[in-house]
Amino acid sequence: MKRAFILMHDYGGYAFPLELSLELARRGHRLLHVYTSSSGSPTAAFPADDANFTSVDIDIPPVRKAQFIRRWQAERAYGRKVADIIRQKKPDVLISADTPLDAQAQIARACGQVNCEFIYWLQDILSMATHSVLSQKFGMAGRCIGRYYHHMEKRLLRSAASVITIAEEFAAILANWGIEDARVSVIPNWAPIATIPQKSKVNSFSLEHGLADRFVVLYAGTMGMKQSPEIVVTAARALLQQQNIVFLVVSDGVGMDYLAEKKASWQLDNLILLPLQPFERLADVLASADAGLVLLDPDAGSFCVPSKVWSIYCSSRAAVLVVPEHNLAARVTKNIEAGIVLSPENSQKLAETILFLQSNPEIRQRMGENGRAYAE
Image 1 (cartoon, rainbow, N blue to C red):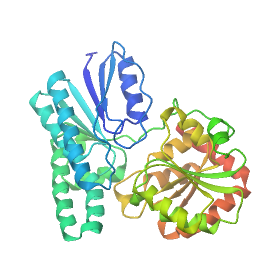
Image 2 (spheres, one colour; image 1 turned 180 degrees about the vertical axis):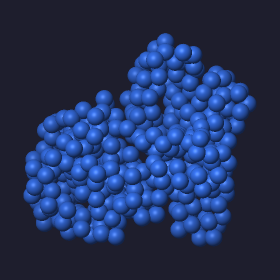
Image 3 (cartoon, rainbow, N blue to C red; image 1 turned 135 degrees about the horizontal axis):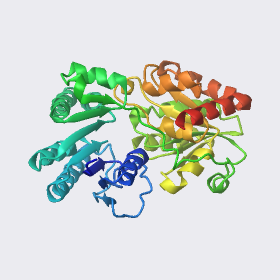
């Protein structure tokens, strides 16, 4: 078997691409794993370098996602830095995931310059997200920018030697874009069970924040407006008199700004807001919950699969999804009976759903066990 020099590029530095890199290195391939801890995503705990594995954390100025111009500049600068590494190191294969399109274009171009096989790992259809967000914010100008990125993403996908996508729905979109089925593989994301063991609710994190004896509904991960943070506010207001129920949001992003404003204006003492925690604490954070919450607005359901649901499965907690029912995360959760799925149109039932789960610990436990069994 030929031992390859593989550059694994994962903009967000997530746990499951790191697991893939480490497994490929264990099999004898030489791995260079490139990411940035400045992306605003919860970054995995990277091990020390060894003979087959090296990681590079590219430094860029931290930029909030709502700062469109600064974000665009930072992502282009990031792409140039990755492209420089490609031209310098000349890997045999590059797998690129979770990458802003301006950066991805520079990465693909550099691969062509050094005869490196470019594999596009498609986690979200970014041009659809861009079109949706910018159209709502800037009207016709936003739609024009969205169309520009739509053409860019199609061109990049068509140029790739192979495309890995995480959902059959995405594969159907790729086929409609003229990308041959033979070049597309559907591989759903997996749960990082090695880094998220099952833990007791009573742990250092829950004790530190006074959560050990309360019913905790947890949202953990980046929160933008596509996660519909107003749903949390509505449920928190409805359950304000339920003294033992708290909503814990561990996040950053514009959604957190919205929640902080509403927490103050409505005096929502049952809404606890904390920044993203170090990856080493993630298992304790998840274990502090009685139910894990996943949110996604109707438009985003077509171009995004919320990977945080797999982390909830790992933690052996019941999942509560307010996402479009056709979304992969919703379908899996229903099929394995790992939680309750509400469509965004029925989000007003979230408070009722939380009360049901609080009153039925046996059902909650069974859902958590089903999720963990699926993750394993």
